[in-house]
Length: 424
Length: 76
Image 1: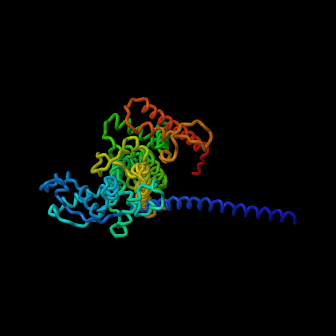
Image 2: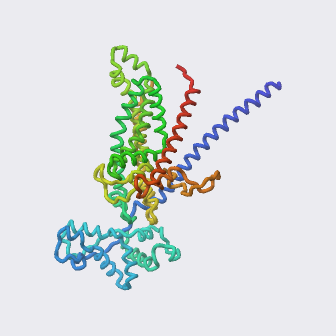
Image 3: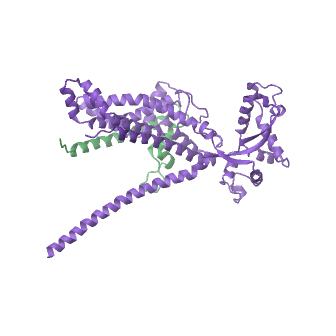
């Protein structure tokens, strides 16, 4: 009787322990998801406004006198023309009561400095517009943009906001006249970096990342796969290969900044390769992803059952034919997955690129692997360091673009694995 | 890399996890971003810090390999 009672108690305790363990597991997973959700939501909240940009509607007269170019209309002289003046004249027409020099400067500050370039391009495309009057939607400055998006509140004390009382009054008048509009910010996806937040775009960084990853992939994928095949299938087991194995494992775990130091010392200082170029960045990231690819590829080769090799050898295939006709094709999905995950890691890497000068301010969009460039995570790092408030949303929007690329790459890896995976 | 944005710059020898400290990565980035001669003491210090990082991970990896070798059980 007492024996079965003790048994019951022990059984209940064991079931309770099972339940507790399950609750711990669920709590851990849920808190992980919660943190992920908080991160994504906060990025979305900060960043969604960067995809829209406010524009101001202005009546612009292409007056050769204001442009200060006389009667020349060739592209060269138009590039040096005073387009800022056209915008100032248009603004003065809208607000004729503003005459004081300081007030005028505040008024001009409502329109972006990039608006002059917009007008310049329009006139170069069609020089026949000279002397005519047209209505254009021109980009607003970053502070005006923040006000339109409601991030600068007129209720705050004047000293604590970037816009003065006068500027707020003008901005409200423009808004109530229907001259301000929030539109999709195409410039964000087509331009390079800029010191003016409203003109800064992500395209330069996307192209820089693309060229860098191209170099990385071209170098690390073939090398990594061949090294893995040799080490796994052909290499004898001796102290030398043991040492190589330790080294590969070590390189996969070394903090990435060490690879940046290597790039600085070897590629920049010894080989004098171009600074800030995707070529050097790609080589450094290739060295960084090489051990990751080798380890993944070796694991994939190891997963191919020995019976396949034995069968191939039994019907007379040479060791090389065995590997390339039978083992490698079966291991390919695993190798590709490893390579894509390595690439995704390279895409998100910043520290080694800081060492080789890819952190410079580069406004031009790179046209090749030797042009100075920056990459997505470094661009985000630069924007996060910028003092202007409007760069906050740019930073979050850049993170969204980067996360999008990372999710896409990892998704491809998962799909590849599911599609080609073989079970034995 | 995250530490460059999150951790501080004050080199502080303390066991208190709430005090401001710095990390090796932050120091390397701080020493090397800027204009220096290649053989300046600052650059060399950055490389020395990199060597420390490399050695520490190497020792950890060798230890890990020994542990795996000792406790691995082979089934086939």
